[in-house]
Image (tube, rainbow, N blue to C red):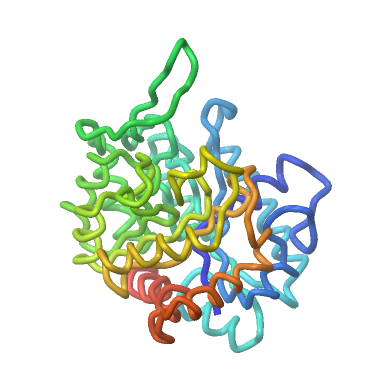
Length: 326
């Protein structure tokens, strides 16, 4: 069984028109999820602030599409707003769809709009994407000859005063706080203030792959101590520093090595899966969500024990959902 903490599939269906969640040429559709025995898929409503003038309205439109697509396929997939819903759907042989937001500016600096999205079923929110917003900061963008050249860690700028309010309100409501894309300083702000476990839904280890989007060993240890989890991201640039020397492709051996390291540093209850399917254009050795099960086979070959594999693939994620979501 598999729980995946992050994908951008709904945003892709919205942009490309004519595609459906039932079957498509993306990395995720219902048929692909069933082939890998996915019991819960987190669907992120992603907003790119450079392209969207009214993120609140845009995310509401994405949720409309999400509800329409799930509604058309109720025989195979159904909404889940809490742990009990997941169990019920599983008993009925249905995939659970878990609604999330990627880019906290969807709430446009308003606690009332955060409460609105909670009422619509959102149960997890990534506080920032790659830009500063009303909640806080992502890591610093750098340029070379006037062109974007990547990111470096921001250890100075974290949560803004409103961001502290947002985290407190999310914990009160029972929404999972997601720190993927947050600046280093912001992650530490949340480590210091949080009262409930939070997640990095799609982030890897910086020691293995030196990218600002990944977590330092210190972050991993401190998060693990608080019962937090991080979902393994399949994006090649976050998996291996060798990606620039070869085809931009995610390889199973790199995913397994990253898992080994994250377990070594954070322990068996820290690591989960957060594929980032349909959030990047690079290719995968296992092609798409129908092949996620190949990663499990690779873990078995590499000597991962049965209980550890279960923790990584679904139990750790379900534990946090059960503990945090109301």
